[in-house]
Length: 101
Image (tube, rainbow, N blue to C red):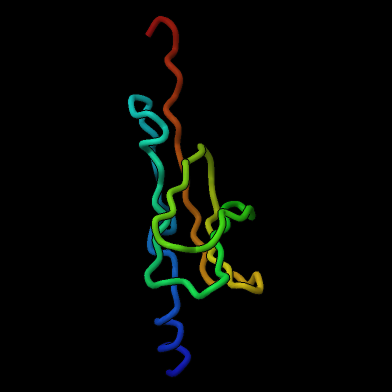
């Protein structure tokens, strides 16, 4: 019971949620399509965001990631590199226009 209460107080990934599908809009400039990375609570000092096993820096508020097409794994890791939370999501890019259509 105590462990559940402690875990509830720890930050976890609020957005994007696991299984989210994000569609990029070709009519909107990429810098306006940045994806907010949100936590349920403030992260502990030294915690980091990782996208596809690459560091995005400290897990702080107001982090916006420029989405790239494909399947992605977003992790919240502690100062020792232990994964505390993880979600997987997909970003779809618009299909190119087919000549003659």
